Image (cartoon, rainbow, N blue to C red):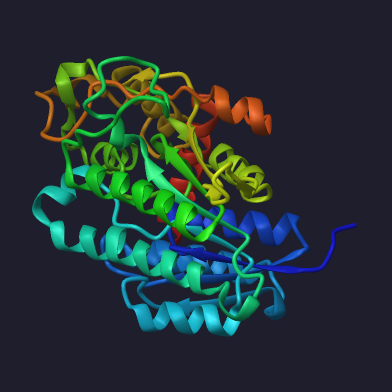
Length: 356
């Protein structure tokens, strides 16, 4: 039996991770109601975002779920959401993602990832006004992109990451610094999660595996960067969601230091598979599963479509997560093999695109 129902606010709820997380909470945790907010921008196919929202609606009662269409960069909207719903837990997944897009479209990254996150922090801070219990835990998305200039692997949260090589990475590191400051100043329990290359059904079309699939279906060439020497720590969506479920349920403990001031109730974790895969191997497994799912014909030849090209600005040769802290403290360890995950994606892809 669970205790009294609490309210959890998920920003970016129509996104890949946000939608999957909302469905999981509403399916498995009857002690929570979920409030979702998303601006439904057109960075990628809006139909996929609407599909995720429809899937959430199909599994819940009205009292368990409410959706607000709005932008976290609009302070008034955030203040209204906090005043009306008084969230106990906030999971901030709303962000403008993508390293390459940040090179040509910087404004949206500052608005969403910096101004928007600041608005969330301020709303959490003021949730304690007038003696209110307020937000008990803020969990927010960071990214493995903060490690791009690192030379050592696996990447550890103890590594110094003060030299970002993309605006996207810079905004995510900024979020971590802001969260730590608010944790210290206002005793706000915060946990940051550095995500490593999340993939799976209903994913983001701007991600490489999704783009590869689209191009293979059209018979177009696919670019493999760094002449095929890239490695990625691919993490299946269900494993990411399981990690978040465990983390948000246990906030960092509030403590007072010897100086009588709060010790920041702040934690930061890598959340990834902990096993990098060569991009060429990934593409070949994806190709096999697309054939098995009937997305591509059985005689499809991928070799003539692979183009080996140089590394792109802001990218990184290897991502590799040290997840020992998360495993030790939460018993979290991904269980989905790459082939299982790509099989699930290929099956979804065929079903989705046959239905539209």
